[in-house]
Image (cartoon, rainbow, N blue to C red; front, side, top):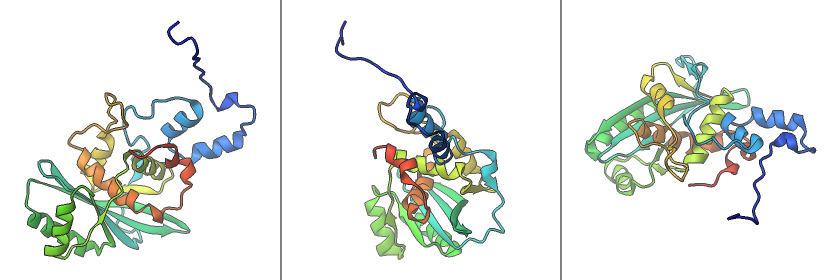
Length: 239
């Protein structure tokens, strides 16, 4: 045979005599379903279909009476593509940090001055603590700071790790979307993994820009969320 020195073995956690079902149950509750399938069931379909598989109808709420303590902004700069912005409110529920996406907007093929004006209004309205911007938009970041007194921080752009975190938060009932954010809801239901790519990439469709802004805001601000990283993102290598 062509590969006579190689063998292929498929096994799940159930084939491990030392596996404790209690540990398995804890792992299953603490990570996205697709991650559990890959790591414990040896089912490598994690990068097929919807990227935000943990986003369900019960993640859509009315947020007007939530006790938000701070806000962060994610900003994905577009040139030919739209520029997308999202606002995420955070609050403490006991000892647990929770978050809700409360606003989003997109503008297309506008000047930095136009982006700055809209961003300034959003920033002042929410008194946001941080703005996380696409690190590839170095010139725009510089212009916003120097010309418009809007300071931004480079976002952590890890795709797989960021989406894994978002799915974990959705699944654990710690990340929500305000019902008024219809575009965000549509985005989360329509962002797909690119099955044709040999890498873990997302399909570049019209929903990707707002999805990137969401990821920038939440994953870059992940220090606020007390999670076991061994259960979620450590299993992936950063793209």
